[in-house]
Length: 112
Image 1 (cartoon, rainbow, N blue to C red):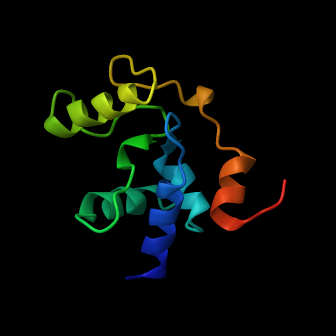
Image 2 (image 1 turned 60 degrees about the horizontal axis):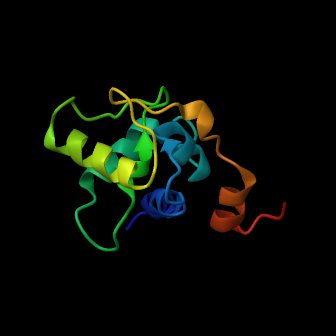
């Protein structure tokens, strides 16, 4: 598997329950700034292996990327709400979920 894919998987896996990140934030954390669409593609192609909390990754404006009412949309809303994330009309207030140094520490072993 490509190293860039593994970096994306690690970045997504490090998002704690009850938190979210944008595709662009995950791309940047994976060392792929500007490659948000690649993150979406990789997550869309992930069919097995270790479970991945894909539901915690959203558009930069807080929208769920799936079409409203689709099976994927309903599943993502269900999973987010089960973790205590406030989802309203298919959106999350992204400003409530800034990426922080805790994620950097968990992913890359960076000090405070």
